[in-house]
Length: 96
Image (cartoon, rainbow, N blue to C red):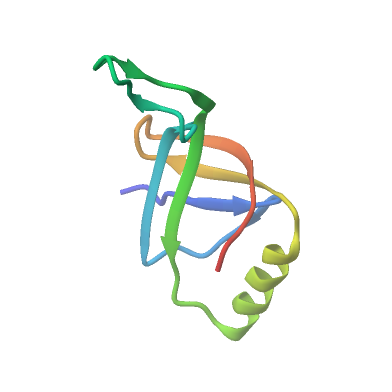
């Protein structure tokens, strides 16, 4: 079986995660929903927003690196898209 590189931050390969989930959803405004007439109104703010949930068991060295990435306003990320089984790219921010 071939090795899958799940995540790359700014060109640096991250270690293999303990768990990994990538999804893509549209972001809707609070005004979306059902109207008084019973019709559905959908006010989309942004289409195709990626969310990547991942957990790692890391060394102190990697914890320092991830903390430094968290301080950046954005990171260029290449990630394994589980829906297409291909690598995708996006600019993201990091929450620890």
